[in-house]
Amino acid sequence: MKLHVNARRTIGKRSPMLYGHFIEHFHRQIYDGIYDPGNPLSDEDGFRSDIIEAMRRIRVPVMRWPGGCFVSSYHWKDAVGAKRQPFFDKAWRVEDPNTFGTDEYIRLCRKIGCEPYICTNAGTGTPEEMSDWVEYCNLETEGKYAKWRIENGHAQPYHVKYWSIGNENYGSWEIGAKSSEEWWRLVKESAKMIRHVSPDAELSAAALPDIDWTMTLLKNCGQYLDWISLHGYWDMVPEKNELASYEQCMAYTRQVDRAVMDVRGLLTALHLEKKIKIAFDEWNLRSWHHPNVHTIQQGVGKESYLAPRDKNDDNSSYTMADAVFSACFLNAMNRNCDMVGMANFAPILNTRGCIYSHKEGIVLRSTYHVFDLYVNYMGDIVLDSWNEGQERRLKVISKDGKEVDTQTLDILATQRSDDGTISIAVVNKDPGTEQRLQIRLNGMQEGSYNVREYRIAGKTTDSYNDVDRNEVFIETLPAKRSGNGYEAVLPPHSVNVIAFSEM
Image (cartoon, rainbow, N blue to C red; front, side):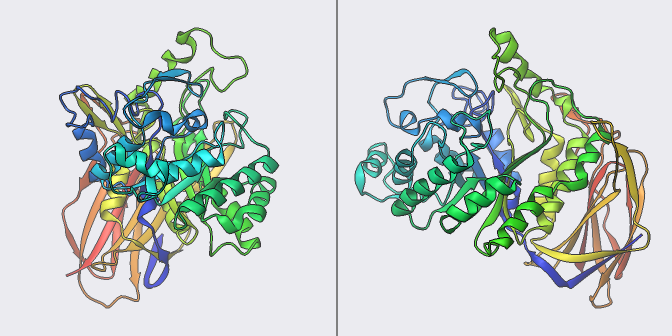
């Protein structure tokens, strides 16, 4: 098969926030994770320096916090200032010490160098509580909450630009779940109050690829919103930690952008496609494992609902399936860069995160290297490309036993706006067979190009990284010279970037 790439035809400019992340007060993401005062690897503020360094390496552009389901019973005022009391987190049924709150989160974002993105309590919270939070973060001196921030040692406002009204409030599992009618009314009143405090804040609200829910929200609140929030987990394992196989995961790649396509249609129908963008602000191949908490009959003993969460720490679970799926997802979001302005991998640390931490260090899981590859080697301008010849197809059996036909190769062509380098990401989903791809740079002057190939390809589909194992990493191939045409050899179950720079 031959791939044609035309640098003169662009789809759009990709926002750096497509490579965003998310962190929640769940299991070891915050406490005993990024925030671990007393650990020899932590800095003077209690943050793990090795984790922050890893986050900087993938240039985290934006990080959503504090939830997630956690936020729907979280009251931010209890976690700022000197007098903090632990509270019982009803979402995850654990005690939270409240020692990590808004000020600590902003400090973390500053250390990483990313934009904060705060998700507010639309479960047990009120529009006034949400707007008070915006006052604390964004007003200079007016009102008691800005003065409270100053009293807490932060004279300058935080200028938090991105705010989400609620989390998954459409879901029965969420504390304070709402009907469609209840939801738009709460969103509208919350947006009004937030905008009275901070007119330049950008607001998001929870939506679904569902006509009734999202159409009602957009009709009533579209004028107040800048973003629509979507979530996606494909391999659902909250109750039983039965992970899909590599081939089953490939079935999920068939339509990773289905939700985007559906919501795009709704926005277009309401003439809002130029005003509102999509924030895919929670996504991962697999859901988090947390049995007996989002069920009517709750687990009674901690061994039934708390201890099983440790299964999320099994690093052998994070294989080339996760890497290949994540690359396909990022390709799809790039191709929809005119509509998708943000995406947040959920979470960045521990649980299903791309970084795993333990007391003595960290492990970079397979998905971390995908972000490293895309952030540091792909371009920001998405280019048009098309295939010539018979497209390779892959037939797999999905987790529900159906035969699924999908593309063998998932391709994204980009160009760097700073130096003109054309970088092409090619994902080979085939579990056991290498593929060859002829690449032709159309519309480019004949000449010589320096070609560099970078790839992630474990020895098997089940390759993974752990404390004592490093099987998945970015391999840099020797530089080559080429004209406008080039043949790439793509190993099975691999993520590849081929970069062309003029000599």
